[in-house]
Length: 92
Image (cartoon, rainbow, N blue to C red; front, top):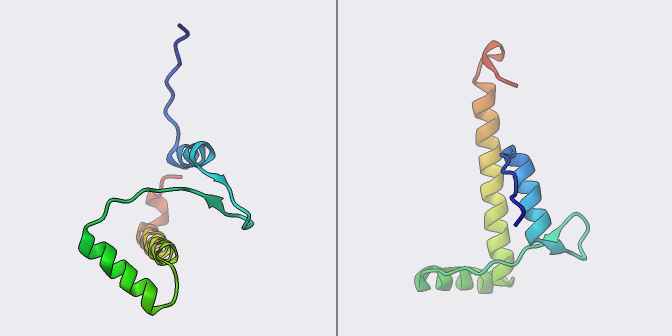
């Protein structure tokens, strides 16, 4: 049996590798198809369904919008945190 050599990847490289392995091509340019199975509390599933019905969208679109909003908030918070660190103290 051949042993695999363990290496530690930088987070960005690890993320690209995970997407390359799990995601499928999408017909939408610059998108991938990533299939997730979610186990949600019934109450949350009903809330998401209600939001989808009221906005005349499907539940997948609602979940994608929520994930994108969270990603934007995380990126903004990281940017603000980086801006508060003096340039002389930053590690690049």
